Amino acid sequence: MKKGEGGLLRDIRVIAVILLVSFALVAIYVYPPPPADAGIDGNLKYGLDLVGGSTLQLKLEGTLVQINAPVNESEVTSFLNDALDTEVEIYKTDEEGVYEYEIRKTVTKEQLTEVLAGINGSIAKRPDGKDYFEDGITRETRDETRRIIETKLNMLGLASTTIRTVGNNLMIVDLAGIDIKTAKNLVGNPGKFEIRIQTNGTGGDVSTGQRLEDIVNITTHVVYGSEGIQSVRMVPERTSEKSPWGAPFTLTKKGAEALRDAAIEYGALDDPENHELAMLLDDVVVYSGPLSPDLAEDLRTEPSYSLISQTGVGNDGLKRARELIIHLKAGALPVNVDIMGSGEVPAYLGAKFKNGAAIAGLLALISVTLVVFLRYREKKIVFPMFFALLSEIILILGFAAVINWEMDLPSIAGIIAVIGTGVDQLVIITDEVLSGGRSSASMYRKRISFAFGIIFVSATTTIVAMLALAFMALGTLRGFAIVTIVGLFFGILITRPAYARVIEKIL
Image 1 (cartoon, one colour):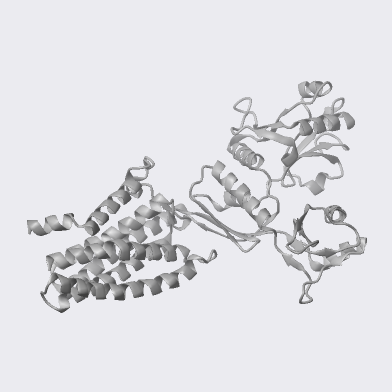
Image 2 (tube, rainbow, N blue to C red):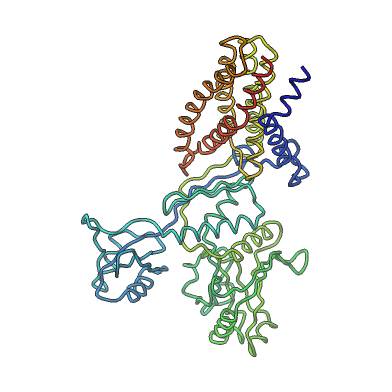
C-alpha cells in the first residue's frame, strides 16, 4: 500500500492537482492579503445579486447620419451645432470623400430634415435607397463614455463594478453595494458643470435647486468645467462646523480670465450683491452667491484661479460635495444617457442569496457523493471522486480570485453544473476501469483512453454550446457559461487524468 501511495505522489498528474489546488488556496486566502473583514470569502468578489447593489441599463443618446449639402463639412458641422444646440462631430468613412456626422443627442428624422432645409441639405441615401440615419454613437464616443463612468466609480473606491457595452449605444452597469439613488446620480447624469454670472434682477433671484431655464434670462454663460477647470481637490472643505460644505477647484488660465472679464463687464465687482456667481451641475444650480469682497478686489487687478462651490450644510451637503467633486474630476460625459431600466438588490437580501448559494453548492457535492456511494458501495472509489470534485471547485474559485471575477448567482449555478457533469465523467472512467475486472496495466490504460474519448466529445459539445452564452453581453447567464467552460477545462485537463490514475492504482 505504501508503495502504491508513493507511486501516486510521484505521478505528474497527481502532483499537478496538488500544486494547482495549493496555488488556488493561496490566491484566495494568502496573496494578495484579503481584507480584514473578508472571513471565509478571502479574495473572492461577488456580484450585486450576492452582496446587494444596483444595476442600470443605459441608452447613450446620439444620432449617426450622412448628409448631402451644397456647403463643406465644417460649415455643416457649425450649422448643426447652432441649429440643434448640441455638439456635432464629423468622422471620415471608409468611402473616399464621404463623411459621417455624430449628433450628440437624439433627434428624429423629421426634425433633422427640417433643420437641413436651412442649408438646402438632405439626409444621404444608402445603396438600398434607405436614409443613412440611425440612433447611435461612434465606438470612440462610446468608449470615452465608458472610461468616464469607470473613472467616477473608481474614485468611489468601488472594485465590484461591471460595465458591459451592447452595440453602439447601450450600456449595462452593475454596482455592488451601491443604492439605486446614488447609482443614478453618478452614472445617469452627464456631470456637465457650468459657471454663469447674474446680469439682471436683484440678489436672491438665483437660488440653489433652480434649473437653467429658470435663470437663463437673468444670467449669462461664463465657462464650462470641461474647458475651464484645471484641478479639483478630492476632499470637501468648510470653514467651521456650522459652515456649508464645498467642492474646491482651480481654474485654468482660460477659465480664470473668462470669470474676470465677465465680472468686470457685468458689474459684479462694483455691485456684487445683485450680480451673483452661479454654478450649475447638469443644468441645476448647486451654488449661487455674490463675490466675496476679497475676491472682487483681487479680480480688479488679475484673474483669480481658486474657487469653491458650496453644496450645503450637514451630511446632505457633504454628500453633494463629494458627488460634485467626482463629476468635476472625471469630467462630463460626451453624450446624455437615458436610464431605460434599473434594479436594486438590498444588502440583506444579497447576503441571504450568498448563504443560500453556498449551501446549495455544498448540498450538491454531498448529494452526488451519496449517489455514487449507493452505486458502488466502495469507500475507495467514493473518496477519490469526492476530492476530485472538491478540487475542481477550489480551482474555479482560485481562478475567479486571480482574475478578479465577480461571482454571481449564475456563476454559482455554473459550479453546480460542473459538479453534475464532473460526476458523470468520473462515473464513465470508473465504469470503464471496473468493466473488465482485474487485468494488466496496458488494458487498464486502454479502457481509460476509451473513457476519455467519450469525455472529450461530451466536454467539447458542452463548451461549444456555452460559448454562445459567454459572448452574449446582454445575457444574464454569461457567468454560468464562463464558469462551466472553465470548470470543464480544469476537469478534462487536470482532475480527470489524476482521478483516472488514482482509480487505476487502487483497483
